[in-house]
Image (cartoon, rainbow, N blue to C red; front, top):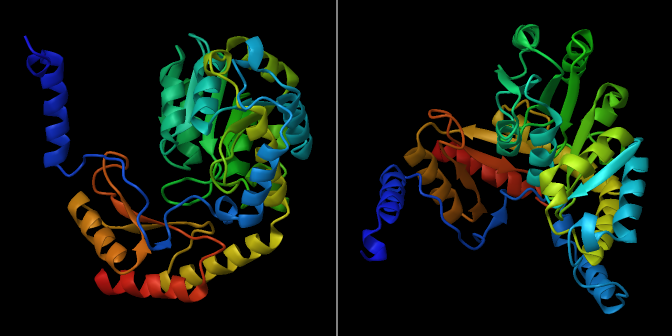
Length: 372
C-alpha cells in the first residue's frame, strides 16, 4: 500500500475537497497589497519605524541569550520575564501577572486547569475559539449564554454546580460590540461566580491610556482574571494573565501550556515592554482612531464604538466576491466566512486604524455602498 492509498490520507483528501467545493478551504498567502483595513494593528505600532530601529539596537547591544533555552520552570526563566510581570501587574493594579506565548496559550492555559470536574464554566456564545478550546479541555460542566443577554446568563447560573466561572470578552472580535460588563459583574457577584474577561481587543483602545474596558469601568475588584493579548493594538505578540498571587502560583503549577512551553526570549520581552510603553503613551493615536470611528459610523450608519466593523454579506460566495472587488479597488479587506461565523452571518470585517486617513475611510465606504 502506497501513502496515496492510505485510508487516512484518503479521508484527509475527502475533507479538503469538501471544503474546496463549498468555498471554505483555508490557505496561507502573503499580504494582499492595498490600504490596510484588515490587520489588528489598531494604533500602527507594528509598522512604527522608530520602534523598528529600537528593536535592531536592542539586538546589537544585547547581553542576554538570543533564545530562552527552555521552559520557565527549567532553564527558561529570566530576570526580564519577572521584571516585566511585576511592571505590567503594577500598571493594571493587579496583585500579579504571568506571561504566556500568545493569547491562545493564555486562554487555553487558564480555562483548561482552573475549573474541576464538578465545577461549571459559562461563556458568552460569541467568545473566541481559544476560550472554547480551553473550556473543552476542562472536565467541568459547560454552558453558553446568548450574546450579552443577562437574563440568559442568570438562567445558566441557576443551573451551575460547584465553583462557577463566567467567561466573556470585553470587545468582541467579529462584530466589534462591547460586553455589558457592569451587569455581568453584578450578576456574577449575586451568584458568587468568578468573572474572567479577555481584553484582547480592548487593550490599547479602551480605558485610561488604553488599559482596557475593566479599567475604564472601574471593575478591577470584580474580575477574577484578565487576559491581555499583545498581538492586537500593542503590535507584538504574547499575552499576560492578571489576577491574584494565588491564581498566578496556581497557573505556574497546573497550567500545561505554561509548564511545557519554551519561554519567550529575554530580548523579545524587552521589546514587548517597549511596544507597550509606546502604546500606553499613544493618546494622540487613540484620539485619531476615535475620530476615524466616528467618520465611519456616520457614513455607514453604524453604532459600534470600536475599530472593528462588520458589513453583513450573507453567503460565503457573496462575501468572497465583494472582498475581491474591494481588493481590486485598492483596499486590503478580508471576508469572514462560515464556519468561522454561523452560516448566514458571513461578512466583511473592516478594521480601522489610526493611520487610515479620513479620505481613505470615505473612499472605502463609498466603494462598499456602491457594490452592495
